[in-house]
Image (cartoon, rainbow, N blue to C red; front, top):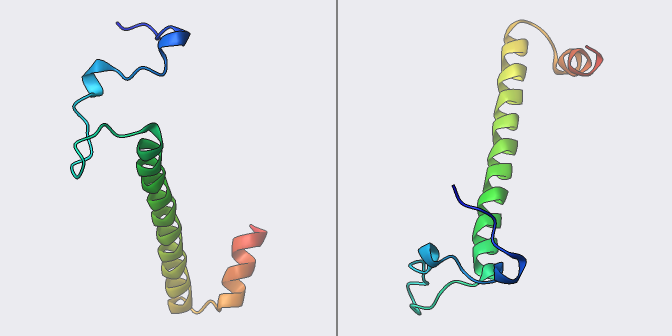
Length: 81
């Protein structure tokens, strides 16, 4: 099992990660580039979560309307229950 790096060694890259380079420059990626890549994935996941929530809401509305419930009744039932 690995131990945490010592504080003075934290800014040194892990030797196992030196194989990750930018394909256009063949230079190692900076911490900022790694962060930007990770942040874009997180933002996409958040956007996906919002889209799924919207789809589920639309399904609830459609099924409630099919059952004869109006959108205002559905809204009341959603927030008052």
